[in-house]
Length: 97
Image (cartoon, rainbow, N blue to C red):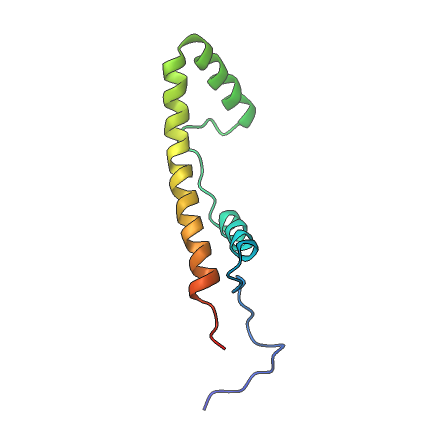
């Protein structure tokens, strides 16, 4: 027979079950921090990345646009997935009373 736990020893859920816009946004921020997606093309140094992209963008704009497009496409997909997960955690896992 399973042991009955008091409310203080039970595991608390990581995400809230609030299906309002504020609850979904709160879950989105938590999920985004937990599952950050790194940029595809990077040197590892933010300042050096900025300088390289600005120089390439000034000298050969289409190459700079290509680098930005390669770096932003995984970020867009990750934000869409995080939004779907935040909605699912907020509304679909809503405890029925």
